[in-house]
Length: 217
Image (cartoon, rainbow, N blue to C red; front, side, top):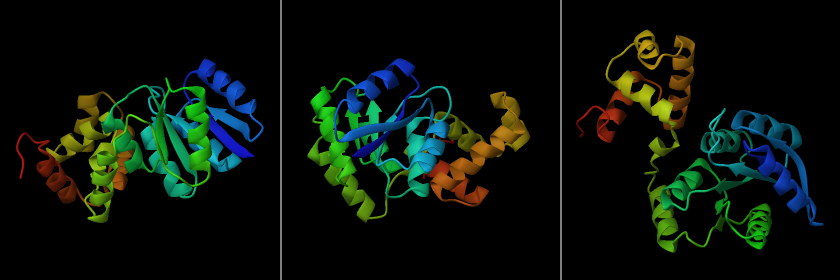
């Protein structure tokens, strides 16, 4: 029996998926969540074999960030990303975050069932539109230690990174983005963790290389 956790911000989607998956004797939906933070909590509590994670969840933590954090807590847990975007860039970012694969929401039922079974067995799954070249390039990048962690940052974290690199204080960043200083500190902590950096000079050098300051190295 494959235990599955559903993480999607649409209740109707979660209900439909539950009905579909529970109708198969080798699958059981053990829980669901409406955003990433709740998904992480449920995953730790329920310990499913597969987490079916929506990529875009505007309210709460998004699917990529949740996948990244969950894989640190549960490295062996299989996460299959659900997305509406038939774009290789999204697939690349999902794999960077630690997902076992990515499947389109528009995929046929049999394809979804096959993908769940594949990742539950420890295999990777790529939807048919993903190319072998993409995977070969990615694996080559990983082996060389050149994985681009910038893609793991949320849009807000990228904004905070740019402002930090430009020399603004936490208070000034909070005023510019109309958020609290505490929220700025939270974003800063998360982006530094994702980028594996500990100091402001490291962030400035990284932002410079990325051309975030208007010029690059």
